[in-house]
Length: 369
Image (cartoon, rainbow, N blue to C red):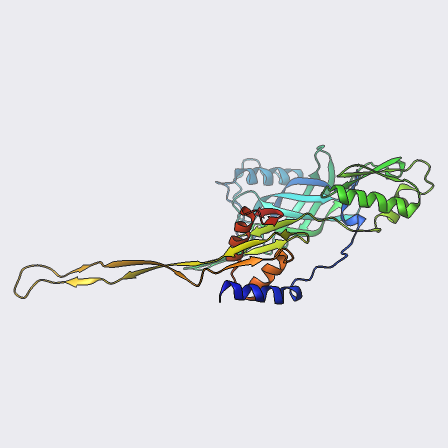
């Protein structure tokens, strides 16, 4: 199909393929984080038992034997001088996330990952493992049966692996033993941090909050921070944030194009525009033709029959090199939608976008992964 023909199809079909909402809005809670309200990472070292011969080997993972010996001694079993070579034990690292305002006795999920040469954690049970934060204090204790989603099947002549069988999870596998001391309601000033700093979005949040309360409660300090002055407010900070976080706000999204070459995914921002530009497309084809020739000696002559290679390389162009002009009122999303409808490959789309960006016709940030 000629370039001029498919450009006409692009402009005719694209408005129906990628409609952008005119007034897409989000809530303030979806675009900001409250300063001081955060999660904390926990980590611990533990032992998994009950594996079906897929645990660590003593030669490659001697720390597993030491950990098992110390654990048995704490349980009153004397194993000094004994050689322990189990195949159903594995050393693991246990990680979890302590949510904000978590209280004693509540449960959190934990993840388990082997650090030795164990081949599979399926069917294993994690033994009581303390989880520490960055201050080296114990905040939770984990224990339970491990759920493994990875599959590792091995036969005599083949092996199939899906996911990672040496990692797993324990839903609600840890109990919180220590709380983070933080009295949120004593704050006289609260800062809202934008997850994607932007001057326009920050100004809109400030205007929305102040219009909702009728007085200047919020102040934009910079494109990433909104400060709330709570002095003279009768409501507690918790109730005040509960009334603020659900206010609708229109987020100013940057003009950006993201191209993932591995998966062939192209994502366009809403405000991506293009200038008037001419585009020419031509496909180069390379053909290599092999026509070997057999050479053999004459009758009654000495010699051997040999095959001589004969190669021919042809480089040409398929399709046409028509040049078409894009009007300024045509958006890049319309162009991509039309190309997608006509079966153009993602790699060719990415090449066209890169060429247009290099020509200065696309007014957006180009991110290539």
